[in-house]
Length: 132
Image (tube, rainbow, N blue to C red; front, side, top):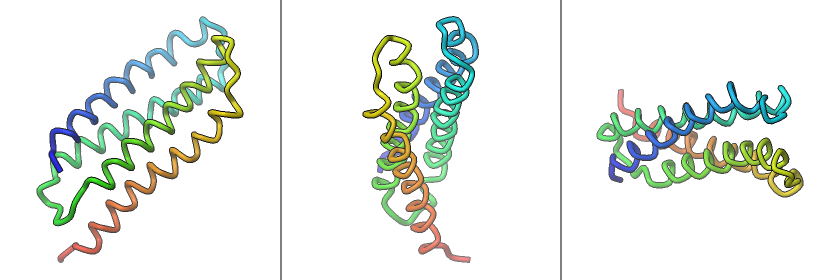
């Protein structure tokens, strides 16, 4: 797999994580978002940032892997988008007058599981090829 995809998505996640983190810290309270929702929003932006850093790290060491990275990459990316994106929707859409909890709420844990699966697959594949 092309390192450029890891770098591009990693950088996009980091930029969005920083922008949305700042939004959570400085703006959400001014539009009536309560502290518990702001904390949830911070979790979503943090996971964007962490996974962005992780993808950049993988890009930097991808030449060390003796296996294909497509499946873990896709799982990490889509899991992060579903996990963080659903949190952002759960916080922001009700403030815009849209009640989406019963539709969007279940997406958060599904995204989290997909994200964990991506990192776990990467770990298992690495352990299977690990040579001391």
